[in-house]
Image (cartoon, rainbow over all chains, first blue to last red):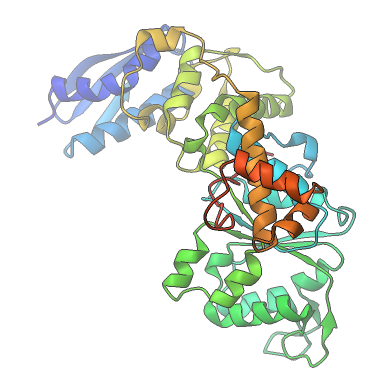
Length: 74
Length: 348
């Protein structure tokens, strides 16, 4: 099952880099097998940062949690 | 598609690692010679750059440099690619075609991925290297060729020889002047240097000055293992330069693979805020490494004959003796395989 804890554990892998750069990635909600996150800080409005995190986080989530389906970055 | 810029020696980054400096010192020594060079290194370590450096530092620099990847062609095609063919040699051979060896006449040929050459073609390659002549496929004429050969391999050919996948005689024919390029993970002190170099280049291509680079970005680069070596690092920099829009290179610009596949260890706060440390460099130690590398090379080329080695290095026989002792090369094999000492890798 996709739980907040498991998603948070994956986000923790990238969070230190983001926080060091004055930003963060926030887990807004887990719904079924999908999750919604928000990017904050300097990179928040940057399309390439969205692509980076969308791809990176979703791939990492699918690797760690087999049943994971979709990531929404808002 | 972007065409790669013409090769220029000025665009080559040597790096600060002792191994890379050793490689470039060795290249300076061998550039004048016409002997065969075998460059071994993982994919992306810069074998072709090294081949270019050797060629452009040699008396053949105004002659052609022809690079060919032996992995690109099927067993039949590689022969016509290397040696050429005559009209009518096979179906579809509608006219004569020069092979790569002929095209490199007077210059240098870089045979990359030599470890992918099938055994049947290895025999033919050996003949070419031994006789310095080629025959086009389907032809009867024998053409003399004056070409310096540089071979590139991503695998250790000695292992392939042991496994029966590579001809021993061809290996010895190629392994006259061995250059071994270290993977990027074994010369981490060069990561930031290469990063600055490539970022500056790709931002310049966009007509932009190199923007500020946030420290966590450097940290991510330092932590990532770079399995694709310098090539992968170059691509990561190109990506950043193409996508960065906010005037500062931030974590969000970095490829997700670099951010997520580091060692998984969260960087300590102090590591992220401190400027990346630059390791100190001992001149004496560096000089000793270079000296030991050159002496090993001379002893190897002269098959252990110290008088000949002294001649090659233009020192007195007695001086060489002293230096051999000083470098701790005294006892044992005449410099054996010094593959780990004369390692290299690069960026262009």
